[in-house]
Length: 228
Image (cartoon, rainbow, N blue to C red; front, side, top):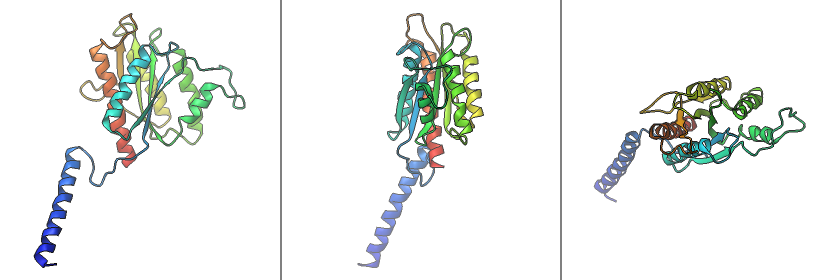
């Protein structure tokens, strides 16, 4: 093989590598980054009403998260219908205790907790979930560095959604999670949606923007954490 051919081959390979690097930088990916496989984001609906507005809003967030990268797996969990015992003990775990234990799975990179707003704050199921999750803190901070986000659905625009979000996020901070909001362009504490009284949040344009933004932001940060 001639030296000129070898040189051309080398330059072509170098050019292709540089083009690939430029494309990654343009996409906001660090040089040498490889999209990790097996990343999972879980959304938990803390409404006692199954398949209603809270779960619909969470599904929109998950759809947005999945659109960030095909490597992301998503799952919506509803606490409604679970067998939950307020006096559950370790040797007799109920459905909620078994579910909470699974949240420590290393494959779960992001957790979105969604609650309806009752009397200006989170639902009883949401409070119970967050309290039960403290077992993961005692278990060597099993949720540490997982990405957390919050979503709230209220019957009026300013009915306690922000207070609900802040309460959920404070609990996540106690778990040493990495918390995020809804990202640009709204960029506040998380997703805040309005139930129009007909069990439909799809017409709440602003609220749906925050839900989609939250899902996207959780996915983006979870991917960055996985590549670190």
